[in-house]
Amino acid sequence: MEARLHELRARLQEIDDINSAAAVLGWDQSTYMPPGGAPARARQLATLSRLAHARSTDPALGRLLAELMPYSEQLPYDHPDAALIRVAQRNYERMIRIPVDLASDIAAHTAASYHAWTQARPANDFATMLPYLERTLELSRRVADCFPGYEHPADPLIDFSDYGMRAAVIRDLFARLRAGLTPIIRAIAAQPPIDDSCLRKYYPRNDQLAFGEQIICQFGYDFERGRQDLTHHPFATKFSIGDVRITTRINEHDLGDGLFSTLHESGHAMYEQGIDPAFEGTPLCIGVSAGVHESQSRLWENLIGRSRPFWEHFYPELQQTFPQQLGNVPLDEFYRAINRVQPSLIRTDSDEVTYNLHVMIRFDLELALLEGSLKLRDLPEAWNARYAEDLGVTVPDYRDGVLQDMHWFGGLIGGAFQGYTIGNILSAQILATARAAHPEIDDEIGRGEFATLHGWLREHIYRHGSVYTPNELIERATGKPMEIEPYLTYLRQKYAAIYGIALEG
Image (cartoon, rainbow, N blue to C red; front, top):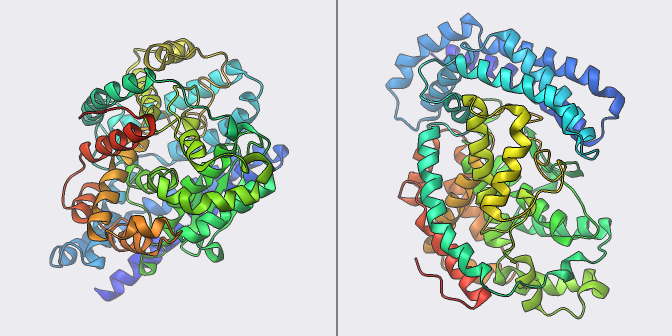
């Protein structure tokens, strides 16, 4: 049995090496690759996709897993060998349903589409992207059809990102969350707007980058095993536990854009850096779902990075970094500015209270496209109508409308967005559990110390990688399944204090 396990790990390591090489090429395309490299990059990624797919669906791998399954069933559920065999088997059963040509086509197309998007968005050119979207939608439906028996064509695509979730479950979750958010948004909208002009001054790029990197070092992001670069749409990526990189973008006239992007991506990266090194090169060595991953990025970005104790410590340092911009701005004014609630066009720039409405709009549009009830040529009009209805804002162009997110232009349509809101919900539940175990966490945050919190997250979330399903992990970590109320309670308490109003549950 040990020999078979050794062979399994060797096969899985080879698949991981190929996928990691593809990830390096994807990172390079999003950061440093010259525009002329785009056609070859699409071909290279397609080649690596074919190689990884062939090894992932090798019948010999299937036979090996079949031999190992009886052994895994004799082990405790959370034994590393049992988890490895179980997750590898699940991945194998998923991959053998997808033809190799389809996987290769997706890799080539999404690389070409992403490159086109980086040029089309600044040019406000939706017409150029429409043929790419048509091809993406076709490929997305073909992937869904590889998994017959679904209730909704989005279900298999959602399952890739958030295992165990379905469109119907998410629709119900979003409906209940919207019901809780609506009275908060209405109550805040009735108040005078907060002045956030202090964030819109000139903030030099290099000073912004240095300040953000100082903070995430204190969070626990290890620059010996990571780095930060600039890109169009910030992301984190992992090539190994020893090489987990983040990207950000800097707007020299919006301090919050780059700073909170850096904090957000560091949360993703610390999760990956904290996985048990024994899982390296296996399918256990990855965050378990998009939703759990987003819980970490949103926890560090918002629940910590926009909190009052956090800025009681870091604001004097920020004032020293930008004395002309912030030297005469009191902490209370700055704190209110970074937590201003104001319906906006851009998801990544939106406040905590209205953010989830952006996600719900995209989720609903994805489902409609996959169902066929919405045509791609009508997508901008549908997008603009939902923004007017849900957020009360007028979309002036494609650039800040339907072209703003890279997800549909660098991936499939379906399963891309629900994880952000699941992550918001889980972030409050997880942090509340950590605080209950360690009441000193808030005092430590006020001193710029994060070791207790980081250590609790590493012990209860990070180190497990994909040993457990998302639902299992959350119930083990918090003692309960995912629940909305801790998140709504967090929003009510925080924003009632900021706006000086009563927000009842």
